[in-house]
Image 1 (cartoon, one colour):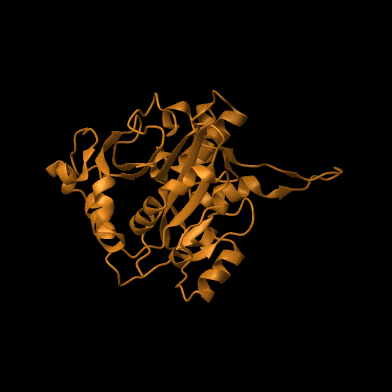
Image 2 (tube, one colour; image 1 turned 90 degrees about the horizontal axis):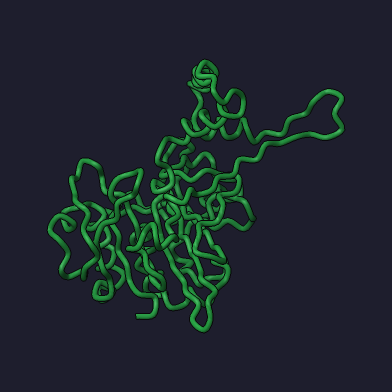
Length: 298
């Protein structure tokens, strides 16, 4: 059984008609055979961990976070910052235990790709709209998370003091982004105080990266399900509008994401290609993304 993120997209593509029926993605009928671990608590990252096969062409193992909103927006990232990749060492003990019980290898320093399954809704009558996007975390991480944390901390302490930024960069130089975030989130006790304090890290999308916003990203229409994967910047690719899978531009066919998705769909159900459109999307801050899209009610 193949369980890469591309196979996962094929599986939910096959069940796309059910998305409008579920207000909470935790209740969605995902294929359990794909997962090595599932989070059972709120605020625990990630919600899903795909099975990993080191001998497969598409080994899997990606982390998936579920994001549902009652509007066409990306809900807040509570107690976390979206990233393209995260180390296995950040996983909770419960998730780590599930991985070991599933026979998965575990290396704290190993980096895994992160994807966000985002669902937005328009509650308009008589026909409410749903939009589903499976998107790589790079879409939201347009500068390094470490740089984001340091610059944000600098604004808190001395908004206009460039010297303070240099001091913070020096202080955090040998720490990873996750270590810096843990420092911020740690509970603090102050002598004489009757309460303890904990700073909570929360992030929200700027309008420019709100993937649910149809005016910003018209390629992502209402009642569609899409997958977005960054195309390596070394692969020079112009912006290409959505077209039928069978008529895909040669430049698109030569990209790694296209070839990976094509191979996965051959495993899941080759017929799914007939309902897909394929093209590219230009992120305002972060290069070109491959977009594969289908109508939810097709």
